[in-house]
Image (cartoon, rainbow, N blue to C red; front, side):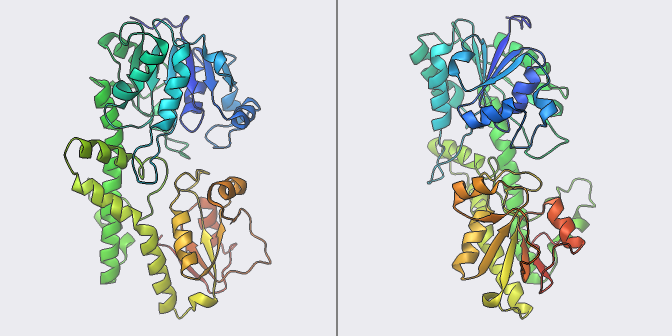
Length: 415
């Protein structure tokens, strides 16, 4: 089985941070259909507007081979499907595979002999072959690894990063047979300049993705714990990390709140699978507890700093700076700033949120919280809490364009 470039037609299911760049890049080489159920999103993309700000208008419309649609019937002619839907956790921090299951059920009636379905969503080892494939078999009536095939190639998109992008990040690939694995690897080599790594199995590829974020979660938890130790000792955490980072193999991370769609979610997938297998991974579990507790810790430390400066927190207008889950991007998925805001409000404090990066209507619909996206010169705030260090916010603070009457900004990074 070899890749036939002229006959290949790709359907990318889900056009978010992961799917849109994929569809655009594949659309430069193959007939590609980008599908999303969100009609507003599809309309905006067809007008050249990407509200995630990952791609500019001229990047979206680079090829007449690419079409973007919300009509599922338009993917029927595709012979390779790439699934890029989210994999969240539920209220009990258990994997929620509903989006993957729904997409598998949706595309199953359309797959035909020889088709390949590639999943990119982050999962625990076994989801592709043990959960998704049986759905495809049952609904399509086709036989796995005889009539149709599967692959897994985990996404590595870093929202807001304009340097490390799809084409220059090494891509892990895998397939359900050696021949299919080779074809899938060749397919991704078409668009990924950095190259690919062909994993020996789908389960290995699934596991490799989830531990990328588990490892980062554990290391951030260590830094968060060290930050609490150094606070007790009266030592500046940033100064310590800057000194330690002079050693060539030191991993330089700063304390913070771990939110977003990956690091704060993916460890629960591996925790779920390992516990079902009869092993309790204490380090992963503890790391999650530490990182989940940081909004509460920072809120209390902020309160302590106000009192030490003899600023009355109950007679103080506080400007919470930043709301997205990370710097310099509009992504609000699973942002921990919301939890921080709730803690501060429950303390009885007067708090207003400011973030020039967000869509305030989206924030209100998602969290029922009002956010300022620009500041009125007549509005007076006393102190700031730097929750997300967007370049624009940091610059405005440094140049005193953003003025605070008490001249105090709480910055847990120490920057």
